[in-house]
Amino acid sequence: MSHVKVISGPDPIATPADIAGSPGPSDPVVAAQILATQRTIDGPKGWLGRALGKQTLELALDAWEVCGDYLRLPYPPLISITSVKYLDQDDVEQTVPDTDYVKTDFGIWFRSSFSRPYLSAQPDPIRIRYEAGYETNAVPEEAKQAVILMVQQLRAVGSENLFLRSEEVEGVGTIQYTVSDQAENVIRRASESLLQGLRVYA
Image (tube, rainbow, N blue to C red):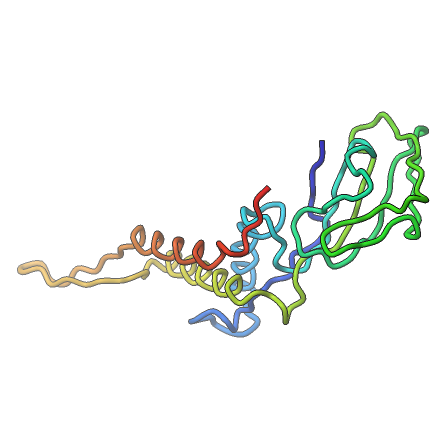
């Protein structure tokens, strides 16, 4: 068994200045909307299967056998290995020296010199902490544009003016209404289309 949790991040891949109608380039409300939207697709909490903004993740494992000699780490791209730690049979945390493993493009390779020590009986005694995601200037443009689209849709729904229409009704006057359901579907499909080439399947 294994699972991944977010230790820190992700960094936002868009800024308030990228959002049409934003009150300012550092508006905290828009910044929060960007991160909230991004987290629906990014890293362990998202559906994309990929890390977009730079983030620190921790993979927990219950046995060395799960690792083998090579372990592919989830939510690429992989930037660096921060640490490999484990609880020994006395429930004391130990750190595997970085001379016993090598970072590869997609995971971690344990050298032949590494002898797998006995582990604690506690759940998930092995913890591999690593940094994943893209540097700011290397974020795929389709991912950035998808986040911008979703934030603009979120803001429009919040202000109740998404695809605002007006209609003159005789004897009543002008009626304004929105078609947010239809607009939401259009934007969702456009965002998913942008992201499809980046999706990582388990």
